[in-house]
Length: 109
Image 1 (cartoon, one colour):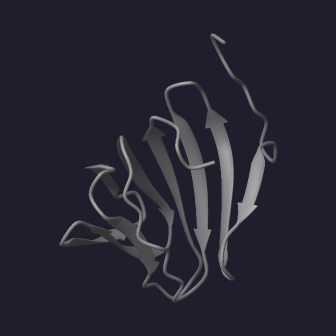
Image 2: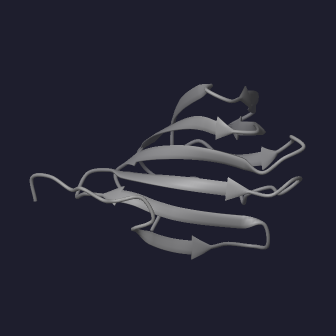
């Protein structure tokens, strides 16, 4: 496959625990892009796997843990990390948080 095009609203959806929704935007043999939505006060599980990730916060405010480091992210902030470090997000804002994750290799969905 040389290219992928998806219209808004297309894609694969996956719900996690209450307050979480994940939408697969793109997935190729080498990378994937996922939109994550987290309700107020919701925290993800901590993950650790091969690869690397970039997170861009589109809406809200989150605290993102990578290893022993914690990053407070506001709208437009970006974070890159190796995925073999324990990582996860928590919505610390007063509205739903929405962020884009691009990961390689594709291991999420």
